[in-house]
Image 1 (cartoon, one colour):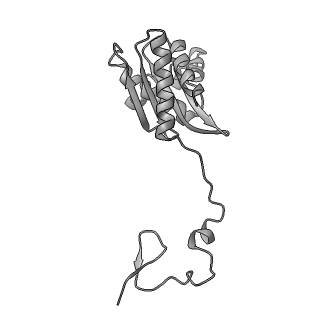
Image 2: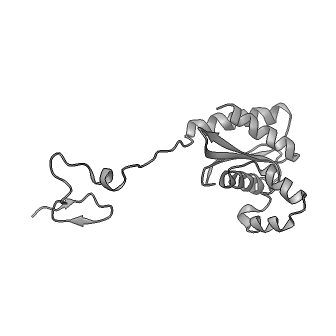
Image 3: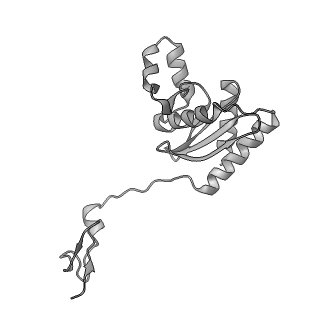
Length: 171
């Protein structure tokens, strides 16, 4: 007797599922009729962003670390330019992660804290987000959805944000 794989994820059966007969809709169409798709960053997109960020930083002779993350805050690409402080390799990705997860520029968080809401600092109390509450990261928005973020660290916060915006403009 031969085994056949069912359409059910992770399960195997010796019989063909009842949903599979000629002319029937697929299993996914029955149970997920309105499955949505979303845009995401490709490797080529990251390369374009990184090249533009690096060009902006080098044009001003800024030694920075540039981090690009996806919409979940997971690191896709990191570049530490010559002369950038070792700590910037931790702060840049943290800024990018905070911008991607919050769907807003990290300057908004800095303004909240500077406005007197010091309790907001506890939102980044974990080591993965240390330094994330400073300006320098910008989310990448496409068709109203956040697809990732660019975080920069190494110079003044406004200059970090300038480098990040230059990279996003390349898309």
